[in-house]
Length: 196
Image 1 (cartoon, rainbow, N blue to C red):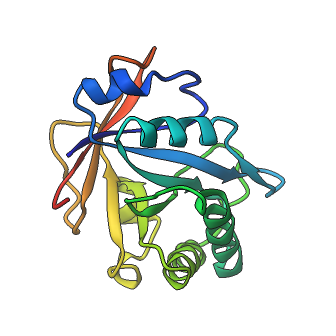
Image 2 (tube, rainbow, N blue to C red):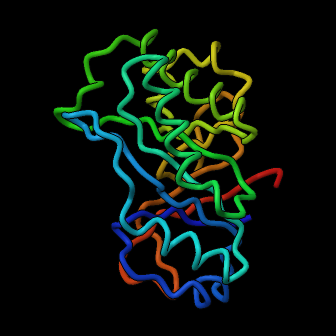
Image 3 (tube, rainbow, N blue to C red):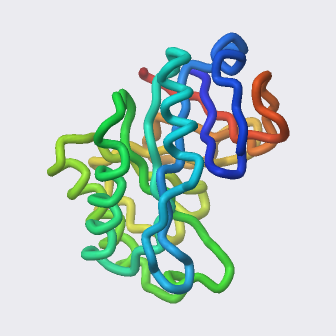
């Protein structure tokens, strides 16, 4: 399947045109944790994006941009994400997006703490009846997480290149952040989903 991921950065989308352009799925940012104060914040375009995609017949999932520093905060982010998506027909996993941000509250935590935070998210998503997934770049998966402790979870790998060099298992590949799709003005992240 071919898909996109979107957030408030794509502020106006014609989802019927997106569907007609051959897009099968969309992963929509539901929220994020503030990088300095740690507050949980809803993406202000989430409801518009998710309802538009569903109405156009596009399969949807949702993601949370994490700044969790431990298991408890990861679990808190998972519960927050589920509270935002519970009234929508979500067909695809609920994703934790873990990556570097400058001057962010989670930059100084250890690999073990970050792995615990992601485990907290994933275990809580599962306990609430949804399928969790981890989004990260190849280098982040290799260097900033202990994937042997997260191996039971689905992976969405970001590598903006002509191939993926990550050697672990993955289901989704984000291959560019400069895609163009009819119905969206400007660049959009593009993805391939395997085994779906």
